[in-house]
Image 1 (cartoon, helix red, strand yellow):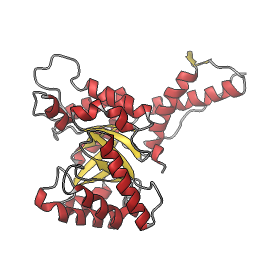
Image 2 (image 1 turned 90 degrees about the horizontal axis):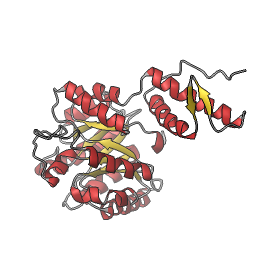
Image 3 (image 1 turned 120 degrees about the horizontal axis):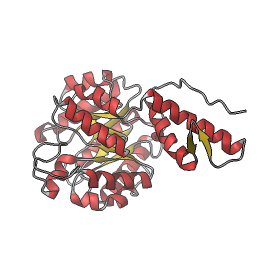
Image 4 (image 1 turned 90 degrees about the vertical axis):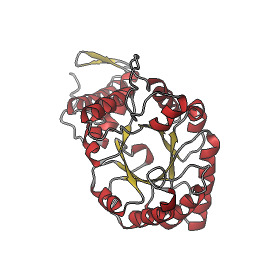
Length: 316
């Protein structure tokens, strides 16, 4: 699939230090699986985790999934070795690298340059490996528009709620949930919308961070549905039990998908056959703006595997 078509409704975190979880991950229903070398791996286990991740990428059947690895932050002593070892030994089986704690464009350009060098050395196609940039603090959010423009390899911006909450002094220990005592509508609306605008301005996807209360399915569904309605493309999940709920939140219903496809088909007919810029469809006006909304909804439906059940019947 092309980068623009990659589905990321659910992005599952899998610790690189756990061979058991790495072996199980290919069979799960997440759209993206990122094998984690960062926060999920203790400092003394980093080297072993790299070897585990390389083996998992090379031996697993990842058909239909976005294959990702989250490396350590650029300021750590592990980052360059994460990139070189994983990209050289398993680059042909890797779609993207997730770069955490991005605070400015130089973080992204460093990774872009290093990947370019590895691709040249290994004979991989230039630009083969993409980047997802994780925005996790106030500095990163303040520079998010410049970050989004930093590299043609960028495919998505990812919100990191835990570090962001700490960065701004949010009074909560519940990752992904509204802080206790907050009287507003949504404490995360500003950073999420800011990221979303930056992502869309540069043709990128926008992914929400995790909801840490693993067994709170209702809370997860509410959080996922909220960011899906805002326009986000997907959400991180920390446990296989969260995948179904998150996939459902980011998948359009059959009726909405059919309507989106009808709008696209009708708009094509009216603008090319009847030479009209606006027309009526099922009692509602459709125009160029309608088409843009329908394109996004139809793309989500196709990514979710929905099949059309209705066709446009031109009048007359």
